[in-house]
Structures are given as C-alpha cells and as structure tokens.
Amino acid sequence: MFTKRVIAVLAAMGIALSLTPTAQAEGLKGRNWVATPNGVVGVQQTALLKAPRLAGQVATFTFTNPAGAANSGQTIVNSSGFAALPWTPNLSGTWRLTATSGTSAIDETTFVVAPMPTTTDLLIQGEVQAGAAVTIVAEVSAIGGVIAPSGTVTVRNSTGRVVASGALTPGASQRSSTVSLGWTPAAGGPPLVATYTPDSTAFSASQSLGSNPLVGGAQTISIRAPQRLYEGVPATISSVVSPGSLDRNIGGSQAFNLSIDG
Image (cartoon, rainbow, N blue to C red; front, side, top):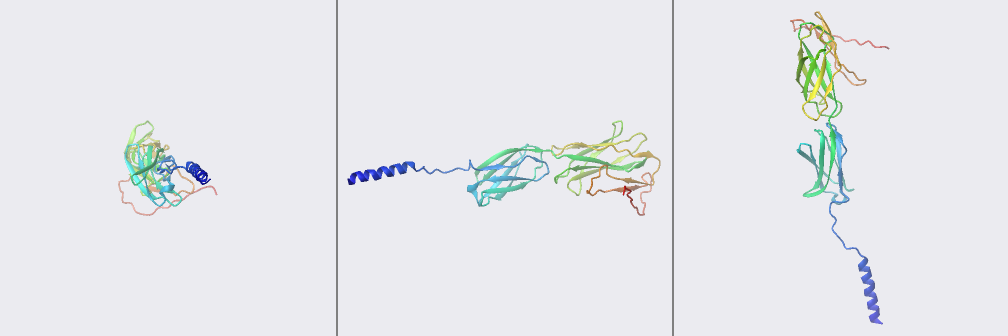
C-alpha cells in the first residue's frame, strides 16, 4: 500500500513538473522597438523607444544620414519602459535610426526626411532712375524650422538675362537668409524675378514674384517693401532717398503712412 502511494505521489509530481515551462533568458528583441515619424529638414521631431526590461538604464539613439554621417543622443528609459529624444534633421533623404543600450542592440528603423520648402522675395524700391546703380535685396525664408537657407540667388530681367547674382548670408531670425545685389536699371528691363538655388538637398528651390519698379528720372524718395505680406506677421519696410544722387550722406527723417479701407 505504501509503495503504491509513493508511486502515485511521484507520478503526480512528474506530471506537475512536465507542465512547468523551462525558464529561458529573454533577449532585447521582440517586445522592444524604436520609431520616429517621417520629417522635414529643420523641424524638430521625436524619436521614441520602448524597452520595458531597460527601465532606469541609459539608451542611445543614433541617427545616420543618407551620406553615412551619424550623430547620437542619450536619454534614460523611464519606469514604464519608454524613452523619448527630441531631434532635428539637417539633411533630406532616407535616414537610419538605431537604438542601443551599452553594447547591446535594441532595434533599428528607417525614415524619410523631406527638403524644407522656401519662399523667395525680391525687395526693390518702387521707383528707380535709368542708368543709376541701386541696391536690391533678395530674401529666402524657410517656411518652418530653425535652419536658415543657404545657396545662391540669381536675378533675371524680362528678357531672361541675368542682371545680378550672389550667395546668401544667414539672417538674425535663423529662418531666413539675405543677399544685397547691385543693379543698374535700364528702360524696359523690368520685371525682375529672383530664383533661389540651394547648395544642398536640405532646401527646396523657389522663385520670387515679378517685381516691376518704375524706371524713370531721378527719384527723391521711394519705398522698398516685401512682395508678400501675411496677416499677423511682422514685416520690414524701408525707403531709399535719392537713389540716383551722388550725395549719399543725406540726413533727415522719414514717415510712413498706410491707407486702407476702414
């Protein structure tokens, strides 16, 4: 009787042991992932990591651009197993994002960054004197983001002839760049159009509206204003005094008046 009971107990234990799964080490792959949305050059986005077993540890995000250059940042995985890192792309194309912890790889993914759209404006005084050199300003602005456009601007007249060109210099706003160009007006030359050519794939090319200053005799004063104005957005206007005069040391004050309906 005792022997039968022992056999029954062992058999029961054997069944129980056979139903118990064997413990195995779980790697970093599987439940872990890293991701970021497609983006635009100069616009901040967020890289997100999920790695529950790395809570409290440091995770490294490495961003590799289409040219093969890489930059990285680190952050701590929170108690819920997530980590987030803000990041701003500076080049368009397909990027690779890799997440690691120490020497262990967590996950990787690819995403696409589009060039930053731009607008180009040509600032010319409204009246100019034929044969008298004046200074015109071309401004290229990034529609969003925090990187000023770089490249060159070419200005052509109504016949398509290049009348001025030059390289952009970043402005104080970090979203726009300007270049001052010399131009000698000739009767029948306008309208003028400025074309922006980027020096990298970070930005999209753009073209200004046609600017059609009045070419005539000597002008005492004329206004230089942006071609595009947006409601609620500050704009800079200026004036040019005696653009055809040889005397550049003209003093005094100026006033602007705006007449609108209402």
